[in-house]
Length: 451
Ligand SMILES: *[C@@H]1O[C@H](CO)[C@@H](O)[C@H](O)[C@H]1NC(C)=O
Ligand SMILES: *[C@@H]1O[C@H](CO)[C@@H](O)[C@H](O)[C@H]1NC(C)=O
Image 1 (cartoon, helix red, strand yellow):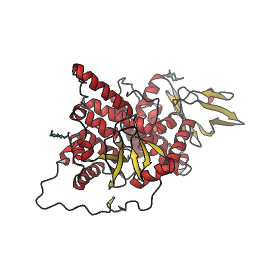
Image 2 (cartoon, rainbow, N blue to C red):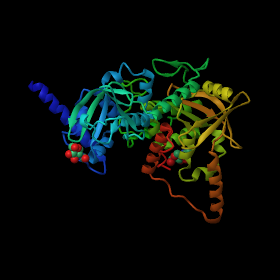
Image 3 (cartoon, helix red, strand yellow):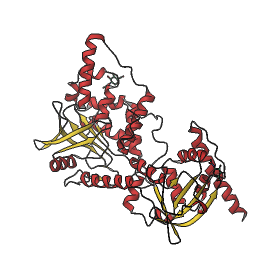
Image 4 (cartoon, rainbow, N blue to C red):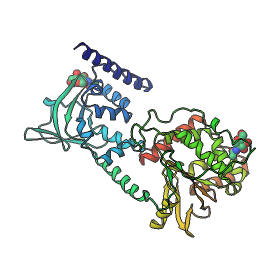
């Protein structure tokens, strides 16, 4: 008996300290007491739900909610989130890039007022939730319904700042169902697994292709290891990759690996140089890959880079912008891109230079990127492909359409009055990456505060 009590105390303490940590970062330091419904949730039988709430980084949001008003949590029983949930949907929810969907889904289970058994509406009524979609509460015979879920444990947890009702299934808001459907059809397009695709060694996760020999006595390659200095973290918590919650990828070594490959391959020294110089970018790429993201780098070859004018490169932030515009947050091989453009004519790929996309189309039996006059052909296919990072050599440097006019304008101004935009700070750059990632992966046009 004692040990059970102790256990509860320890668990409660742990829960409170987690909440406290979350609140320490909040500007409004809300007081969470150990009797809070949030602490009760983390201790409750609804372990699957509370785990998801933590994964979705929602503790702080909820803490702010209970500071302002009572809440009612409709908590799906564990089975509803385990065996009974479509595994594909669950995978979708856990992918880092779908964080916004997971958050919306969870917030849809919370009503910002107190609705205990005695306060339950007599007839069907709509209630605002912490997501943007309302929830219908109704009665059917003696059964109480929240949306299409049955309340199976009424007033299961009762606290001064809120209530938890147990429900028999997960509530799925329309917008999340829509996101899921969109992703699924996108995947159907991009998952074209071509024949003759490069073979990946399952043991090392590397491309089965002998590395080109390094001539004896050649100088050491560039110190990419120094480029991988640890920087501020992008995401507050490690997120599970597509390989499952237990598997974490070593993204940094994969980024080092592809930079090495680029250097050994020959003809891409400029690009490798920029990557080595932009330590932030390389580090962030490594982190993204560790977190389960995949990337395709469209690498302009040296000839293409040589055509860039000194002015174009000297502009503050120009190398970063160029790089971001050449990184597609998808894993594409030459074959998958070629199949896609052959099937659909023109495809626009998202880039990390949000909101700019890069156009790809079929031309001369190959893939041509870019529109108007600034185009590049896929020139050296599959320079590096390890299942997470893909590097495709191209023979031109790509610019987003709007930026071309911007840089022209800037040039015009420059000739009159050498105007210089101030360089972005490190912090600014990181925020930009974070915003870009959120916007890109959230695919949420409302989320445009970054620009
Ligand atoms: C929550 O509800 C209780 C009981 O109705 C009330 O005493 C308390 O003031 C409410 N708390 C907030 C923050 O509104
Ligand atoms: C990388 O940095 C070195 C040393 O600061 C510099 O000489 C070189 O021009 C830079 N390369 C690029 C492509 O920016």
